[in-house]
Length: 500
Image 1 (cartoon, rainbow, N blue to C red):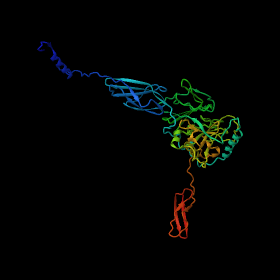
Image 2: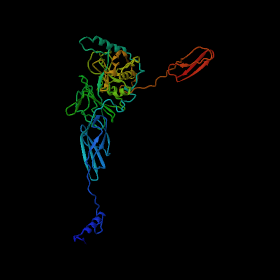
Image 3: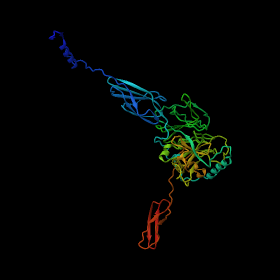
Image 4: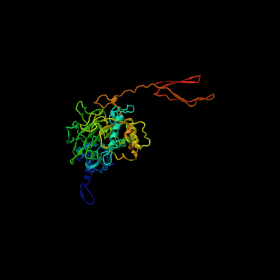
């Protein structure tokens, strides 16, 4: 006990000593005590993002802006238009996440040793369907009939007959005041179909209503598909095809629907669904032998996939198209050639051989000059020379190429100039029967090209002169020789020997 000069009687020094012992972790009796940590503030969670809307597949970088120094983070999302459960996707401070089609809520849980806090941003990221970008996908194998070049195939024996049959009918029925099939005078590129890109973040649901399942599309796959409320369906000007195409870039599958329609509750109905594996699918719908008398269709009357022949923006942007174009034509004879599998049961006129059958293949003649065409038109025309166009369905106005609906593709703009000047007389039907392995596969029969014996020939820059005369020779042999030897004979003779 200490007495201070002012006679204040306190235990002040003892308190100081006791407090010092407590801080040192020792009690006044010399025994250890629990350590003490002063209380601090828990984080207040908040965040920002590099984007809140865009096209699929959208890359978004998140930045933590929480206060009070969090030391750990947990990020989650839910798709309010699909799987509504929260899914964790990162524990980084500033993660990057790729979003497919949907409306996504984001949750950040920020914590430190004092506690944690959560911040939810509802429908924070909104992603719509992307067009014009194939995301590095390839569409069917190289030896699939759609992807096989036909430059060396022979002209079909009925080529002129079919083209003249269409022309004769068009001229006879093209009168003032009536509908005119302008097939001989115009090639159209108006048949536009959107592609909806999604990835594995979109939940799969089933079509709720099926129509006409006793018809030719009764063989629908009926597989749960990645539907979202923002999918875009073809606007086909009253033709009632209403084609819907969804491409899942993770599954590498194309979901194709015929007469698709979305109800007010976001459920879907259709009159046919067919799912194509883009990696290795050679499937052809069952032929008339298995399903008499007409075979079975896909969403195309011919039984062929639409996605395979769709001219896409990214192909035009890359400067080359490496597959046949899909085509629809007004006049058709309601029979079918391989690789098609179905002919409609309609009792239509001209069911004889006056017009071409479904799945007939046209090739733009090599003599057609494309040099003055618009940029995109030239790319299409050169592809039509190499891969041609396969008639997948019947249309209502001439010959139409099937093109992806994309604002960057204007079928009638300057980039397409010259394409509509083409006529059917610039084309020829080809005979691709030599490529068929059998009627149930779209895989082509590939053969090594026959060896052509070279025919030797050459030219020279001079043939006479005074000695010494230098002469340059130029080999002009045909048949693609791979080896040659020059021989000189004194009596003004020169010989060239070449081998294949």
